[in-house]
Amino acid sequence: MKRIPSCTHVPRRTWRRTGVLVTLLVLTGLLTGPPAAAQTGMASERNVKVAYLYNFLRYVRWPPTAYADDSAPTVIGIMSGDPHGRLLNQVAATKSVRGRRIVVRQFDSVSEIQACHLVFLHAGTAPSDEAEAIARTAQQNALLICDAVVAPQRGVPIRFFADHDGTIGLKINVDAMARRGLQADAKLLNIATIERD
Image (cartoon, rainbow, N blue to C red; front, side):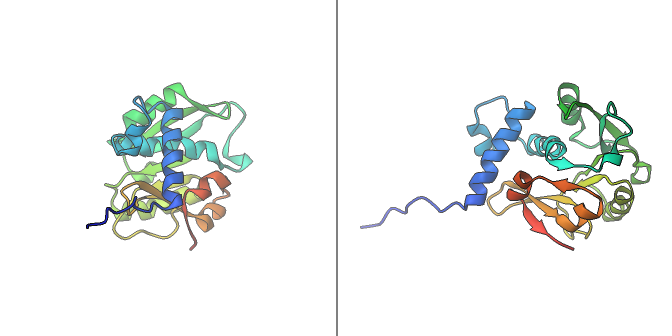
């Protein structure tokens, strides 16, 4: 008699990440259907990444000098033509972080990046542009987030990657964060793979 296999073992980190993901999508308003939609992969990859980007603003602390004054907005920088731009603008129009409004700025080239708190480079970014962005954002104490590339470069504070189970994972380089004067909350570190330079 053929034995029916029991449930496949799912690592605790995967369940924790899935729960956090559903919460992120609900909080940002990017999940309009039932939570099961996110768990079964129906939530789009862009929605997931934008939800993470918004929540990085909530769970990362910048040095006091990062803002000109108490009314200064939190600025997200993306490249022109980034497919996440529309969703990020929707979030910026309806959300705030620690009493600060959110502004999304688009740049035509990496060399133009300035005055941002968070900079996101999507997967289509050239490795040479990523290298330049690492240097430019480090000088500005900006949180740089990159999408997965074939040969990851050192010095990127946060990187998205596709986990073995198909979910979007995070790699946080705590050394790169510290050099920029940025502090990640324990809640964020708990769902990430920690890296060091």
